[in-house]
Amino acid sequence: MLLALVPLLVIPLAASEPNPRGWLERVPPREHTQKSPIRRKAGAVAQGRNTFRVHCAQCHGENAQGSDRAPALTTTRVQHHATEGDLHWLLINGNRERGMPAWAKLGDLQIWQVVTYMRSLR
Image 1 (cartoon, rainbow, N blue to C red):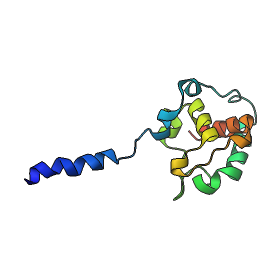
Image 2 (image 1 turned 30 degrees about the vertical axis):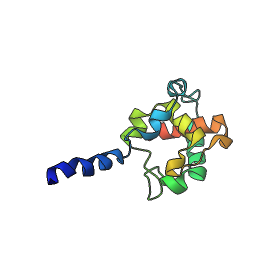
Image 3 (image 1 turned 180 degrees about the vertical axis):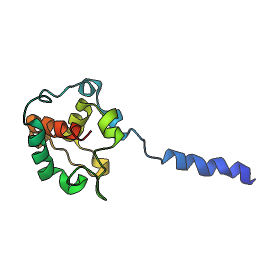
Image 4 (image 1 turned 30 degrees about the horizontal axis):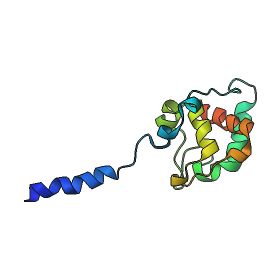
């Protein structure tokens, strides 16, 4: 009888596991393949760092190391699995399930600068 109950207990636990790819699966293919138009421009990393410190560091930490409020941005998932286009899409749209606001109001240039800064953390 006990063996018959085990699947009933395990299946709900597996279904509640967070998706390891999460927001990455919601990025449209067209956005996923975008490349930063400023990734090689002088000053882009410094400008992105400044914007990051004003708008992102309070949750993600001064050096993007993460905090109790938001994840680190130096992880393999962010640095190697996510494309520049994925990061751009996330900054524009946010991730409300995790409490991250949309940052579209910053404008495209500043968003690409933040993406460029995030990539410099590799």
